[in-house]
Image 1 (cartoon, rainbow, N blue to C red):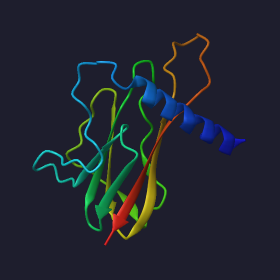
Image 2 (cartoon, one colour; image 1 turned 180 degrees about the vertical axis):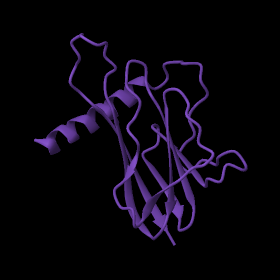
Image 3 (cartoon, one colour; image 1 turned 30 degrees about the vertical axis):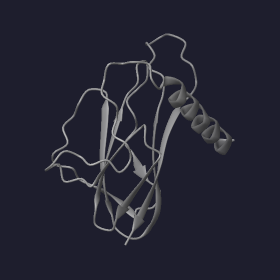
Image 4 (cartoon, one colour; image 1 turned 60 degrees about the horizontal axis):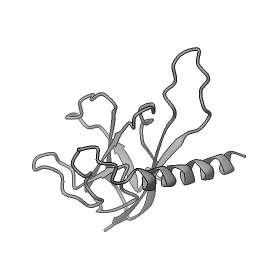
Length: 144
């Protein structure tokens, strides 16, 4: 049952992501996987919810930046499926920003890991609330 729910959630996320492209929010486009962060940030790659894959070399740092959509809760803290390949790192420069979830990782060994996070509907207390979750997943490849 749990696998079916996760698969359904992933499919719903993909459909929502495809359907929301080009809605003209006025914001600049999100960086693509493998994009270069601003100088001095200390990250080799920045991943957003628009990214589904990224590649790093051992020793490089990855930042995950997830912005909450309208009507949704903040994303849960992103986790790595294999911490021996991609381990969490402390980001001393990270500041709390409203509706933004930040996480940092370090590529430790060659291999593959998946970063996952989830969000749900933002509901008013005492109101009926839909039962669904949106799941973010990015497959990360680490090379030597």
